[in-house]
Length: 81
Image 1 (cartoon, one colour):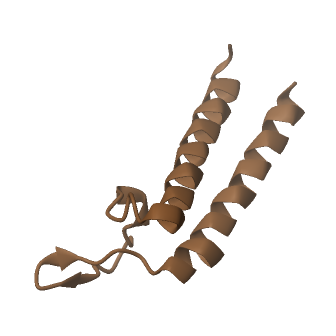
Image 2 (cartoon, rainbow, N blue to C red):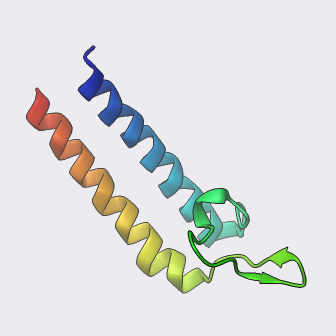
């Protein structure tokens, strides 16, 4: 397997884990402190405790972006075949 295909498959696996974690967070509240939800530049802390992400942000922004990236990765994989 060449390196390009392996990189895309690794990306797909990562995106599927992220989507699974987001859906479980929306359903049960599990994975509230998963590292994928952390902001890149600003730390959302209150009294030295990290706040969980807002449910609407996970549903409308994070999950939407991850699903679009997953579709794009599948399209790239298809082009390599």
